[in-house]
Amino acid sequence: MVVAATGLTFVTASLLSLIRLRQVRWRTARDALFLIGLVVVFVVQLIEGIYVIVRPGDSGAVNTIAILVAICALIGIDRSWELVGGPSIGISHEVVALVHGHERGADDPSHEEPPS
Image: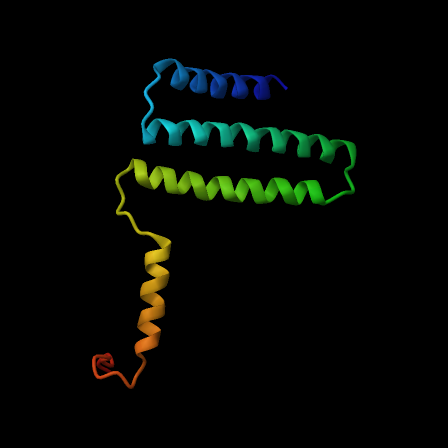
């Protein structure tokens, strides 16, 4: 419980710092939204963790925690990729390119077979 209180204290302090600076920019708003989302996810995980303790036979709470952890891991990977300056690859751009590549097919003269 002490760890939970410490985590919420740090997130609250970060939110208060953003509010105190009063610098309304997209990056600040995005950071504030991220911190609010972090608090919401943390509270949901805490509640579901209590359900796991109270009702150990119910797998729904465990599934919810697992899904939240997986989503948070993906968001963490995305944020860290941005932090290290990795190239920006949009998933929608890649899906559109993949679909257009399959639409051309083998009948298209611009479609070349790789050499054997």
